Image 1: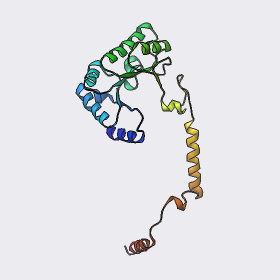
Image 2: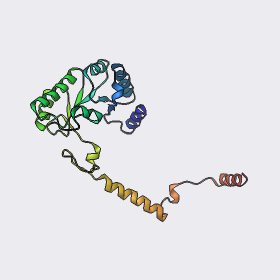
Image 3: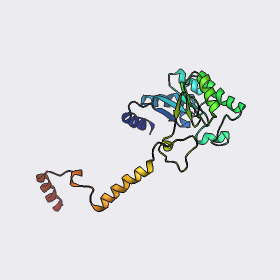
Image 4: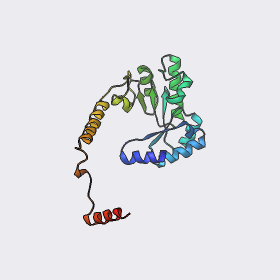
Length: 215
């Protein structure tokens, strides 16, 4: 579905930067990473996000002209099991250095930019300043080169707001109002009106009705 989905998003949002998330099996080997990454970029991706990629595969992709924008700090999905679950990282000097070293190695192996997630503000600031490539903060505060927030947080769609999130709109009340208004009009007959459809040519309608009766 990836090529189709990339095409749909690209046609809808021509100016947006698409950093396409690569599922783990798509970069299980260097060859798979190159083939799948090239396919995604040819279909409209601007960069590729292989979460938790190893340096050998990353370098192979970069050496073959693929644009990789990765991720350091807390990992998402099943990979959180390796670090004991989805949790804050970099709270000790040793842990913070592990996050930095991963980012540095990524940079040196060709990664063009990266997000940093769930690290202390001080660690976020220091790593963003130390690395040459852009570092985008996710739930990490600080003076990174950019900031990312998930739409579910932006539109207040989560059961409980995360500490890093700030809601800028309420999606559900708006959606309830819209759906309730539509349902009310359908039940009362106010929608659809005649103007919401179109009519058949009378001569063709007569032919159709006659054919239907004689069927």
